[in-house]
Image (tube, rainbow, N blue to C red):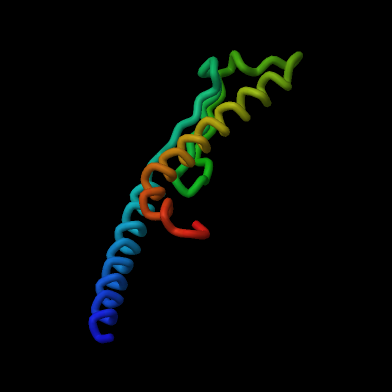
Length: 104
């Protein structure tokens, strides 16, 4: 019976260690900058790893008063590009901790 308690103690230590590593890697990821770019590179959206937009750069050539929908599409493409980068890095970086955990 005591032998099972030792295994449980080791498992708890490993979980604490993994939890600490996960938190450290999450901090590193959140401190990074991600830049999404529209297909024609006329719009760039910059985000932190916390998914907060910090900059939006628009080439003046993208501003066509006769076609406001084009600018909107370029902005959406750049924003979605940056968010996709954040998601993909999150899966790669943090996924190793959550892939085998039910409910995560």
